[in-house]
Length: 241
Length: 241
DNA sequence: TCCATAATATGACATAGATCATGTTGTCAA
DNA sequence: TTGACAACATGATCTATGTCATATTATGGA
Image (cartoon, rainbow over all chains, first blue to last red; front, side, top):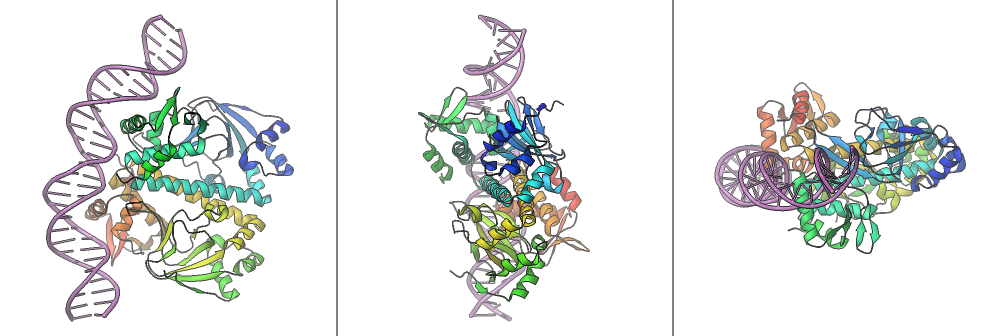
């Protein structure tokens, strides 16, 4: 198995990279120093696993470039995409790292990816000595929890067209780049990815996206989606019929 | 609207009560003192809202007795039960309290309930001064996040019978009281509650439960369910056909 | 104790969405 | 440029599950 190549950067380089990450920007210099010791940046190609379900959780990760999908699979081989991570997102900072339990899901790269890997122990120490950092993590986890529960609600109560609409709206709000034609989702999401995120079959997802495109709410730029009318999309996500 | 009556206890009483809660048992005496200042215990009757979706998040709650369901509703009036809380569970400790955002869902009592309410500010202060406490909360949130993602996966990939089986298995593991006949779920969960937890229609849920009962995996004691064969239930939750 | 109401149960039917089949379009490497 | 493969698209079924209708059985308050 190819786990990507690991490079170690100079302390200064690493510090400046960490500073760019919103969730870590509040760190004091002394914290930075302890963090950067033993920290490495890993690079992956498209389609590689950063970790798999069941692997031991040894690192705290921060995505610095590219996109990663968090995936769980069923025995039959069907995939559920729980979340798409974009630069700045933390992952595997959760229960697993603390409890010593294995990873509850996989992290799969969607293209070329760079990740900062921080040793569990260093991360742990940081949180113990820096309450501000711990509060930030609590806030982050709280938000992720809300998101996950919102997703669960969507799966439990909404129809296929609503699921697709709210999924696209969520993606647009989180990572849409404003352009003259609308919000550009500039990561390569296949219809299958979207289907796995919405808990729907590929064909159903394609049909729903076609419908939204015909209605003029959606367009494409190259091979990426453009949300042309976020407001109507959100209305549709809640409409009864 | 009747929000239940509020009583204020003596500091000693409160301290001893907090000590009984696993998640707070590690607290030092000085932390306890600051926490108990301004802390109140509230009592509710069956069917009351502790808070509703959209309410401002002013308190950190710890459930001391009874059962509470976390609920989100759709415009059409359908309910999704995200989680059933049992004594010792924290709630509303999440993003809302920190971000100043309103509650993302409702907390609805399922019977007579007692709740410790701790002012947002006191809770905040506790976490800032006690890294151990913050780490415990991070661990707790991490686990809740895993649970929520596991639920999302179930909703996305599993059939009705599997959903019911894994729901019952999860409940049995979390709160089943061992008895000679199996694991007793001694809170009053209606079929509708179970349906709302599994994201299924009431009738479908009833049919699945009847089937499990006929198969001998399930029984009842009074008006509560008994899981007679957890192992087979878990096998069923993953079976392909 | 009785009555009104809520909860449980079960059959008949409707339908959203999965599955299968087939074809088209796009993409990238040689 | 071409050829092979992946992604996208769309129609034709099939089926799991939702919905509706109707009983039966609990439950809790007067």
